[in-house]
Length: 264
Length: 264
Image (cartoon, rainbow over all chains, first blue to last red; front, top):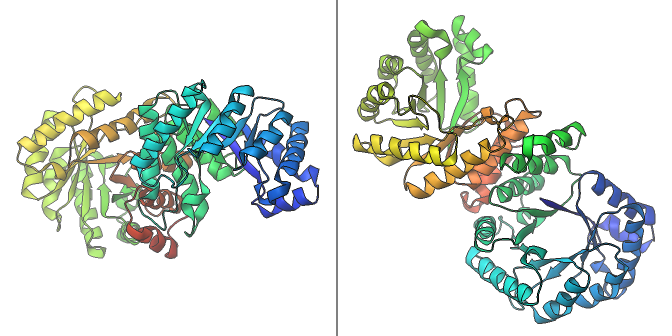
């Protein structure tokens, strides 16, 4: 299971403030806390800053690389921004994200090759996002075809089937869970990844919904997630669900995390 | 989802004490609390009392039926005990349980017919318990054959694939999850049911493991569980997982339970 720490994202007020005010230490502490909680990648996003995005992202990349050896997940909807900042990354990064939109594909895939990166592929075309399980799987198949025909290994691709608020459509989460299972079965070697917060939009006790969705997704084969690893209840659900799926030999990952006080 | 309230079980010290001392009110309060938390059946077990089991079970049945209209789940490993007490039950009960052992099958199946009961079938033969997913599915198939060839509808049968401690065998929980999915796919109309506590034996933070296992099992198709519905974190995992599987129209089950203060 690959854990991508989501906290350094300019859509969060405290992060946007820290970026705008140049509060390097705040950003660095967020990176260290996620590393200590077990993150495999640190996601970095400055997309809220529009035309200043690339400059700020470079600054964040440098700040975070001063305090951790973890690889970064460079997160921008704009391939031009990714192109501008990626040379500052010291270790092979993850790129977040491509879709079937041609400018994003054509802009990003050469970078994946040049920087030996991995890449998140959203189940989304230029015009629409995959809503049903069948749509998600169909778009996933086309993403895999595009990526592998560029000479990139299928195991460098993390398919994000997307998830929409279950409060607006009772079948939305189930469509994502079905898609995860089907994608992992149909396309051997590919990974699946998912964000969690969107699913609970508008519902009470959102964190309960998010962590339950994570456990269910792990039960269906999910092998990467974008989340806050410092959320002890969320990490508890993750470590327990992996253990129960037989992905934690001798339960040592669960027991170690428990002993470190990381689970609740 | 059918919730079978597990708390009135003589393996629990407080229940054994209440039974032995004739504390009717204690037993009745346990029944009411489980009813109020959303139980569909109240499980009643006096197996710890050996030769007094049938007498005590009759007493419990009467005590509980005084305070709730809910159907009962008559829980004994001994078909003779079930035979002795079942006529005291006012509504069609669930019988817990049969296995492939001939005395249990031959003793219980006529009662299922006579009392229009449902029945839990454990994935267990006379000599062995199903350990791998394949063994569990194979035994489930034989149970279904026995039950349906007696003239009982497949939808009266709740298959319990059994779960063993993941701390002793990393693949034990996964075998159960795989079996649940396969049984629900292969044998249309049958139900699956599972107890939760065995899976976490020997591990820290057992309740976290139990409720995560429940969420994963729901994600794989489980449609009944034996549990403590008054455990708010467990009920939270259950309601959220059902909602995310598209089994809670307009999320009303989740939202109502939240408003009643039943979820955490």
